[in-house]
Amino acid sequence: MNNFLNITAYLSILLILGIVIKSKVKIFQELFIPASIIGGIIGLILGPACLGRYYDIIPKSWIDDIRSIPGVLIIPILISVPLGMELGKENKVVQNTVNTGGILFLVTFVQLFIGYFINFIFDRVFNIKLYKSFGAELNSAFAGGHGTAGVVANTLKEVGSGYWELAQGVTVTLATVGLVAGIVFGIFQIKKNFGNALTSEVLSEYKSGYIKNREKQAILGKETMLTTTVDTLAYHLAIIFAASGFSIMILDIFKKFQIPLLSKLTIWSFGMIVMFFIWKAMNKMELNWSIDSRVKGKITGTLTEFAIVAAVATIPLRGVMSYIIPIVVTALVGFSISWIVIYKLAKKYFKDYQLERTLAMFGTSTGVFITGILLLRICDPKLETPVLQDYSLGFSIVALLGPILIAMCIKLSFIYSYFYPMGLLVVLTCLTVLSLEYYNKRVER
Image (tube, rainbow, N blue to C red; front, side):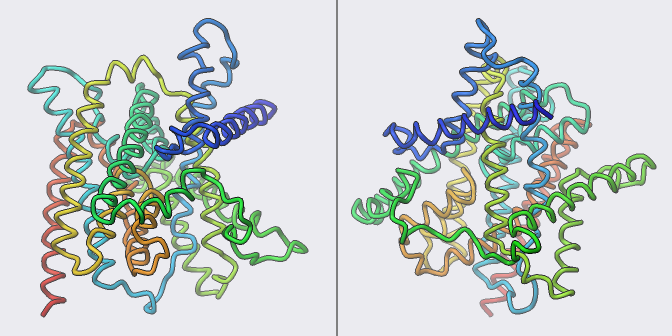
């Protein structure tokens, strides 16, 4: 228990150091590097991969626990996704939302395929053997961000892999590259199309990373509960952790009795199903008023920050450096093709705000959801266009199913070979393209 408190305190110190350094160092502001990544880098320097080789600054007993944190925290982060989702006919998706979700799905399939295809090229053309599941990291990193490194690590742990630490490190490295490159390239496109004046108007707010003006500070969320009963934050946390614990217990029973299909589910995919039914039941019992999506978002955001610090601080540098060439090739190819796919499809399927939609989707396909909002806010400062709504609804569908697909591909490649997920992804890509074509032709009639 003391170890838990010590590690949490250590990660908190790293996070605070990251905040202070970002507020003082201009390069981190210009590149929009999050404080959690900066704090994680400090932890990496203090850890066994750098200074720890000469002197144990951080107790060795902490390292394994810290390395496991992303895989643990990703469970409640993903399981919470269905909680607070808008259900019902009044929120029926429109054409732009369907197209946004379809394009984001296509990018997910393409990124996963690119990763496995590069694995294939290194193996069959250059006779360089990468680890069996290498490839899924591209989409996990680019579209999932640093926090999703836990998905890769946890899935590989479940199948008994011995290289989950390396895969987590590769994912974190690719996520950093995608985040920085995505923002820089996105801002370049905005300046090219809108000019410097519009860009600097909003950039100044994001570079510092904080808001001093109290009138401009956003509201954290609604107090749906009175403290005479329970704190609102505690109530939301209790539902998320209760659903996580319940899912773990039920899945353990499935595995114990080897129930077909159900015993093979990952904890977060099963947990998301459980949470979906919990949320649906809450809606039927008219308890949906008690959940505020912003409060839930702040909880998962907090967990993600600590997951990122832990993931970056424990990157196995030697292992990652031995994979530096495939990492660079994967990043370059994945980045280029992601932009081409999104840019071309946005021009094809959207009749308005094509660049805004392109940048929002590109931001989330190379960084995280917030990166997409950042790029959108720069070219649409007051969010007056309908892009944010379409983008948010389309993304929520992908966020629900994306991690399940990643876990499935990792398992297929680990148990069999990279050919199996590649075949699956080709089929899914073709089906999605045909569905988009059919849907849009039908709507236009």
